[in-house]
Length: 382
Image (cartoon, rainbow, N blue to C red; front, side):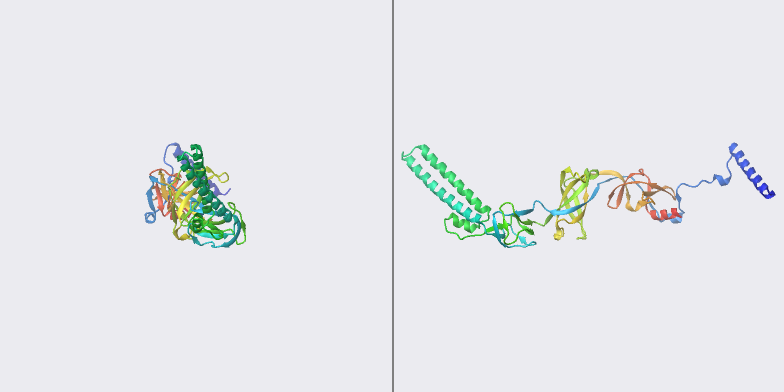
């Protein structure tokens, strides 16, 4: 061993012995060991001007529930049109996209049902007139003591029954779409021309679907012919999961966003399903939305934001205050002393417009960096 190495070891041993002696006697350690690293990131006064800090306090707020949904026709203003009569279609009068009035003809059908219904009405009307005439005669005979009361009352009962049959036959004519002018001629016992069956619009709206063609044989009460819908108002069907269900109520306002419009459509929650979907474990929620400009289309995919009326209390921070670490975990910077900032991992709750609810990681009164967090993150990485 060289003399220089021996001298170095001796000096090191002497320094260690001196340090141990000082600690044993309760003395202060040498200045190199006394300096402790400050907790958090320390910025000089010139750089603090880039940082905006504000304390967080419990704040009352109304939650926002975000979901996706699809557009559907308003079930209260849309209906499939079934064939009221049987027979082959002779003419289709409308095409999809055409606006129609209630009762307007949509198609004609060559149907034996019309001839049968007209014949039934004529028979019922004739029977009713005859029964009424007999009843009036029996009343006169009863007053002259020519027949018994029982015979008179039976004649009156027969007249009432015959009149009911006539009314039923008349309603059948209306049901299958016989024109009012033809019905007036029948009621006045006038001859009528052979008429075709008519399929009419049950409500005012737009023909959104045509399901029949000329020559097609349709069956009364079973063949769907058209779909007519009032497009001024639409339904948006969305689903809400259990964690958000308590914040959604009938009457809550909602916004519907679609790329078809730069402005959201505003609507109202009108129904919450009484059961949970067995496959998604979510509850269906219906939003009624005025269809501004007719831009909402059936089966369109949209984003829905429901504004709850139920108030909560929690700690809220601006979105700009929340950063992500290398593991994509959210954190914020908290000012612990003048010019000193430390990283604090947080648990995020729901986003409320430009703020996040903090469920864990912060306490009331903590001074959170709201602007300048990216600068602190960069400085910390140097």
